[in-house]
Each structure stands twice: as C-alpha cells, then as structure tokens.
Length: 309
Image 1 (tube, one colour):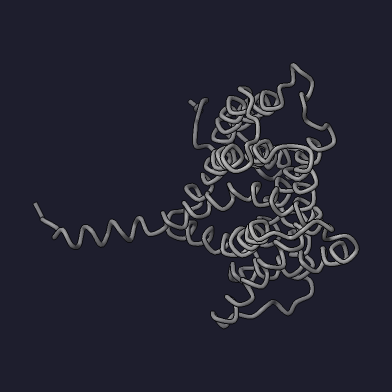
Image 2: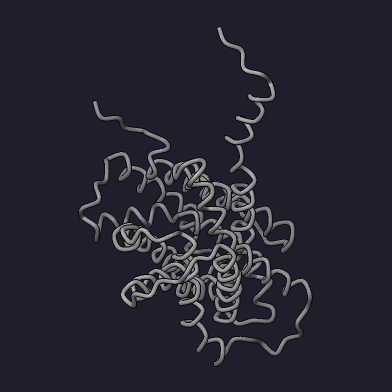
C-alpha cells in the first residue's frame, strides 16, 4: 500500500478541476446572453446588437492573438471557409436571435437555443450521410421534438408568441446545426490554432455585419449605462473570451464535458429573465425545456436508452 502526501493529492485534484471556473463562467455568460441581447435592443437595432457583439469579440481576440504572437491565415481559401462558418455561427443567428427577441421573451430564446444538438443531428441525417446516426440518437430527436412542442404550448397554437419570431429562432438554431458538421468536415482538417480560427471567424462576421450597422444599427433612444455594460459583457466575454474558455474545457476535461454546458445555459436564461426582466413563465416552458435537454442528452449519447445487444 502506498500513501500519497495530502499536498500532492490536493495539487492533483486542483489540476483536474482547473477547468471548472471556465466551465461555470461559460455557462453563465452564454446563459445570460439572451438577457444582454434584450438590454442591447434598448439602444441598438437587431443588426446593431449582432455587429457590436462580434466587433467587441473580434477586438478581444485580436489582442489575444498579438499577446500570443500568433498570425491570421494568409490563404484566401481558408478565409472563405471561415466566412461560411461566421455566417452560420455569428452573422445570421446573431441578427435572427436579436430580431426574434423583440417579440418573444429571453427565456423562450434560451430554451430554443438548447435544441442545437437536435438540429445538428437533423442536419446530419439530411445532408451529411457519412455521419453514422444510431437508433438511440433518432429516438432522442423525437424526444427533443416533443419538448419543443411542449415549450411552445402547441395545444394553444403558439400562445402569445409571434409565429415569425419563433420561425426566426428555429432558423437561427438550424444555422448552428449546419455549422458543426460543416466545421468538422472543412475547418478541423486545417489544423490551425483555435485562437486563429476564432479570431478570423469573428473578424469576418464583423465585416459582414458592418454595412447593416451603418445603414440601420442604432436607435434614437437614450443610451443608458446598464445596456452599454450588457453589450460590453456580451461582446468581450460572450463572443470573445467564451471561445478561449471553451477550448480550455475541451483540452483539460474533454469534449464530452465541454458539450454539457448546453444544459446550464437554459437554466441561467430562465432565472435571468425572471429576476432581471420580470418575464412571464408558463408551466409548459420549463417542463418542455427539461424534455428538450433529455432529448439532447440522448442525441449526444450521454443518456443511452437503447443499447445494441
């Protein structure tokens, strides 16, 4: 029997748990992002919110790149591939989420965002035939779809929710669903540092959204401190440091644990909406949200219902 000194055990434990602060920060910032968007809409238009968060995120990562002495890619083909990713992950969803949140609560937006794993599987089934999908994952898709219908309260139509806004949210999440298999196929093989990929992606998103911001990016309403601070946090942390935290978690804890942050964000979104915006919450939204998360867990093989014999 060998005895390990307590100091050594403590050091090992801290190394293993070193990713936890980043994990909690990521879940909190992404969960609050819908609240920050709501605040940003008080003095910015939807395209303005999308532009400012990308611009602040890009500036943050450019500074990081300089500090790490890394360089942006020189191959224009790489820039084009990352432009596609920026459209799917930043530009289009950024505008759609902000536009939809003019007519729906931040709570609903957060719950629909949790359906990203389900949309990813749906895209894989439809367009990426080389990706193998198990029966267990297909079952998870059905469970998740049931959860989405419950969130909307489909038995009442869409309740007080705007049909157009709901479709925008689903289209935004569909963009996320397309981006992941596309990234796996075209971006990962490039073997570039994650910081370089993320910085290039946000620069391209900023340039794409710049014309929209110039044309109609701000409102005539009075600019107040709290909304400005909300956009600063959303841009610097939610669209900047969030990438760094995500890479840290993947590196130290693995992609499986990193992906479970999607289970924290809707919970944070619900509490943020209730506490800071006094948004209404109907019984079917949290119940449907739980069903969605169960479906997402099945899809990600974190909850196995059917095992192959």
